[in-house]
Length: 209
Image (cartoon, rainbow, N blue to C red):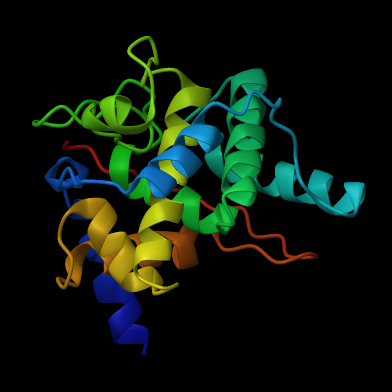
């Protein structure tokens, strides 16, 4: 078990992001409409916790883990609030989304892949045509997270809740283990959190894109 975790951790630390391999697909009218509705929801991001103290504990812990990458306190908390909100509204685990961003962009807001995937969650521009508008800016933090979480929710629905295969779809490598294992390793090693848990650690980030 320990050997497996170590191998997965080393793998995600060196694996280049490949979200640009996503395949553009024909969406049914009902699916496209639902995704468009999600993208165009203008609600303001907030932490979604039943217990405010739990929310503050989460923010304190995640902020400490992310501080080395994003030193500015205001921007770091703004990003974490947006991640938690967008993940929760899409029915995703916020820590899983943190792992996905870790692998995809290393939390670099202006990251661009070799095939044009953009931003924190490496969203391909064809999604603007499919479910967005021409003036949507995929480098905008809120827009990118909204698109990324909506797309990940769509893939989970397609795969009937199978996270492993949904992650493969997000990466464009369905059926191959490298990318899902990388995201799961990042999630479990660096971003896993339970109420009452305190585990500040140094986080490494992918350097190649």
